[in-house]
Amino acid sequence: MELSEYLTSDATSLAGLVADKEVTAAELLALARERRDAVNPKINAIVAPLTEVADARAADPDLSGPFAGVPFLIKDLAQEYAGYPTSNGCRALANDVADRHALVTQRFLDAGLVIFGKTNTPEFGAKGVTEPELFGPARNPWNTGHTPGGSSGGSGAAVAAGIVPAAGANDGGGSVRIPAACNGLVGLKTSRGIGPYGPQTGEVMFGMVTQGVVSRTVRDSAGLLDAIIAPDPGAGYQGAQPPVPFAELVGQKPGTLRIGYSSSSAINANPDPEAVAAVESAAALLSELGHQVEEVSPPHDDAALARDFLTIWFAQLHGQVADVKKRLGSSDSEFEADTLASSELGRAAGMVPLLRSLANTNEHIRALAGFHETYDLFLTPTLAKPPLAVDELTTSTSLQRAARVVAKTRSGKVLAATGVLDQLINDNIGWVPYTQLANLTGRPAISVPLHWTATGLPLGVQFVGRLGADGLLLQLAAQLEEAQPWFQRYAHLDPALGPTPGRG
Image 1 (cartoon, one colour):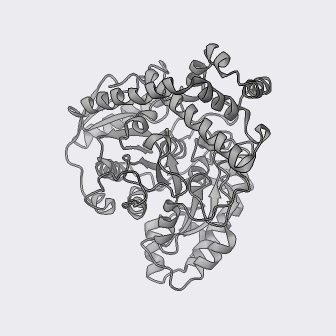
Image 2 (cartoon, one colour):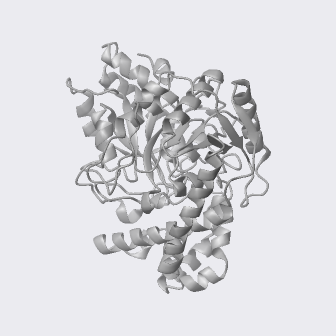
Image 3 (cartoon, rainbow, N blue to C red):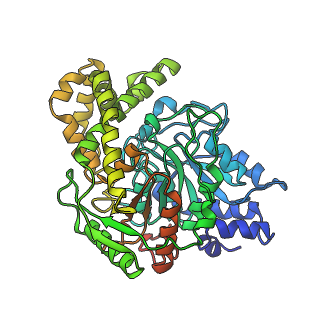
């Protein structure tokens, strides 16, 4: 197989070639590494190689599974690989070697995937951009001056650049969908309780985080999610499993759907015209396909939801930082200043705001459920503006120094009194105000790449469904993919010339 053929094949087709003995796993791994060596220095998507284990798997004549022999990458956060560190983008964890696979990693391996590296992520997955101090920023292969999003930004960049056809990701506030939107990919955040988590930890953020993938085709996302979604005997509870494999559903039409759409946001009153255009063009396409589409008011107050989301996030981040310090004896110098400040805000707030925000999630759930009594799906932009420039959200040196002082002196209450929470909402959620809804409510949501900006950057649109509507979202995505194909577009990064626009 030539590299050009590898770059224009998805994981499903590559697995078929391996099964038919037209190509070997070792040959595919060599092509993936060739592409990695050519483009990763420009996009910084892969931060840790898994060389020996990948070589052994690629050479194994008994390798089996629905994706046997397909090269794959996992995220360097909550997708532990036994015998290798999982850094979570944090200096304190740079040498924290996993003693066993995460359940999702084991299921990727059971599917026959050849995992040969781990992808870049912000510290603790805390931002919608991937710019950890430990590894440096990941860059968008469509234009390396821009972010590939986060927190699964390394995975998104690697897939968009053609290193692999799909990669591991997870989503606690948009971390599958934001990179999908930034990189021209498909990304489904599944319904709460149906995917694997652990065994290193139980539910993260009270069930708001789900495991998944980013990919270039709907059928790859469907097949890979089929591979990882199964009952987990170590879970606190079990969500209803999909009655039909996703890979079967994507070959069926979704029927006529009633879809309400909006680009309105209380956080960002003026979304970029490109974000509005993305939704309006998607609505027009949906109408052409026979769906009933109408503009609606958002079913929820996203500003209130953002405050609840960050309150919960800060509390769990404080728990993570405290655990790492206790377990490894880490000092403040081994964490980023933004992490320390956010952790301190969580500590200083105490239990009452956390419990109040957790209780408020019931209101957000019922508001969205009320919307779904009338509409099958809620359509929004995935991003309120095109992918940001790299370093656009970097905290100034002076503010980082102040953050470290606040953490050291435990002055979180003073910091909170300055209105910093509202500023954090505006700065960090203002460009992605649409994605947290699905996490707090536990609903499935998918980003699909229907729009490219005038400057050649992807900007996806998001559909949010009822609890358990994962299959329906994939069916609709497959219909949209057929109507407006996107697979032929990928970022053609020439090592000598730098990034060039993706060609259709």
